[in-house]
Length: 303
Image 1: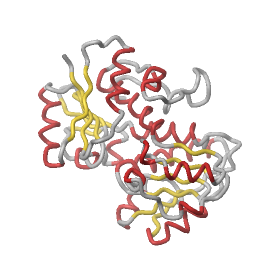
Image 2: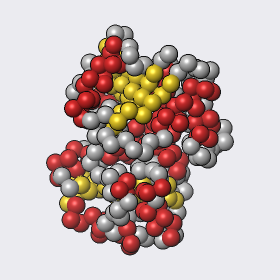
Image 3: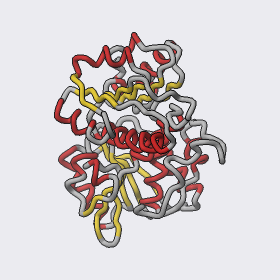
Image 4: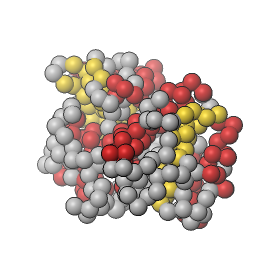
């Protein structure tokens, strides 16, 4: 019986099992099981060895394992090699492979949920990213991809301002975000948020039910993506909607989109996005509508 799992610490709240199990059912993989496995940092290497031995078919990683895992796999595929962060580990050609589907999830969430692909979005207002962890790295890289696509269409996209408590890490994230991106001091985060046209929240603040700096001063028309999800993390999205946001979403869509890519890599089947979204109560775009596939249709395993 193939078993896959999500590893994190702590891991009190995760919808990954519901998403992956729905994908397995829809694909007819009746014997597959997906588990949530709370895994301490010191237990990560042993858990990844279970993938190498075949005891696990593959794993997904969440906080705090995404960057440490990059040092424990045999090979990093794109874009994990650029980010130095891994959210999916599986075996490929006898080697332990680290992949990153968070970028595809972020591209989908930014492009579709916040409509940053839309040529009706002016694209010239201040854009702020809060956070410097693995998700922030993926968001920054996704931002650079969207910016490149908009430039090819002759459309502007504001450079990203990255705020984090660790200046060196903020600079690393900004370095992935494309031309003009810069790291800014966390002390000025409230002013940045208050002036933002686009805000992406990738810290653990809202996951703990805490507000982000400047949350009470959001501009009407702002577009907000909080990469956290779940009942306790809705404060920023609620505040954005109350302020008259043009778009506001939590991280559930991004989670579903990155999970779809992980299903391809671990189970080697094309995921049924409708089935996955329905399993967690997420409305999904109708086939053929803009953004109906996260980052484009899933490619072959390891793509």
